[in-house]
Length: 358
Image (cartoon, rainbow, N blue to C red; front, side, top):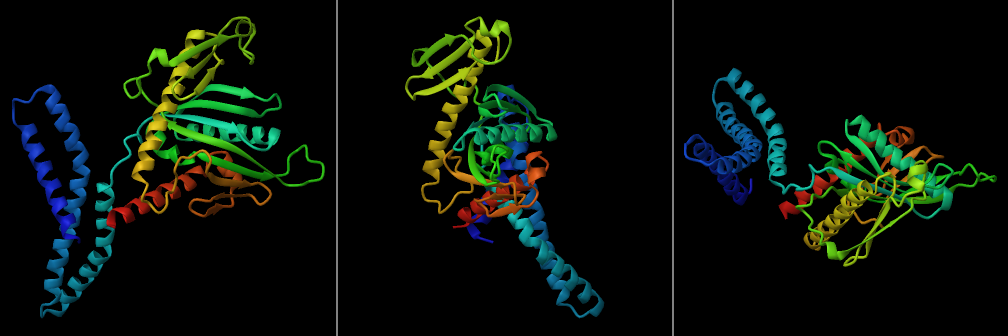
């Protein structure tokens, strides 16, 4: 193993022990104890991995010594054990290296999902609605709460755009690679000649931001209220409940009109605006950090074509990792989406490990 890595592992083990001793001593304030406890719990799985790796290395040395002895029976047993340990060591070392990779601080956040119809007219809007429902089903399968924020329908079952808050454990970690252009290839129901059309929808997944994360100055906002044009009953359509917020410094515009209450629509619009502003900051940070990277599994760029759903052939292809699944029905119901997400996550981890080794 790299000597510099060994030094780093020694430092982590020492720090873990120091924190344990400090926590056992009296005199710590509640805030100090909480801070140390958090660091200790974060270091514990890393130290457990280091301990397992070093124990295996020590056992391998002992087995090698025994294998060099004169007793034929003991020698055979020791050689078998040494072979098992040699096979386990790379996996243990990789696990330790993975535990040292910087974690995405946003992984445990809830997310705001936005899906917009792209090129393709009515067919694109229908596909956008299907994608929105795919994520809704996927959220249900994982036990997450899926709350639609604003849905702009086309009247024939399609969505011009739709947004939702997804709440649960590790939501952003699972969905962050979904951002980008999703393309569909199929024969529209309105196509008499049976010709395959290509349409697209854009997906954006943003970590939900709290007020403490993004400070929005009231003077930077222009807030317009107007009468809702969407469905929702008489009380929606006859009161000025719809809210449009324009963030003047960036030009971002958020519209909310699904709720009957102007107050609720404003709160929802501010939630989406905070998420968009936070995502802009996040993208700027990521771009700066990734300037020297040869490739990225998912940049989160909304203009990046990430996946194609080919219905005639029953396949879904993720272009970033060249993965193709011939189970489009299960992908669209959310059942097989984990297979794609797991592969994207593994590719991202492998890429970051390779970068860390350079």
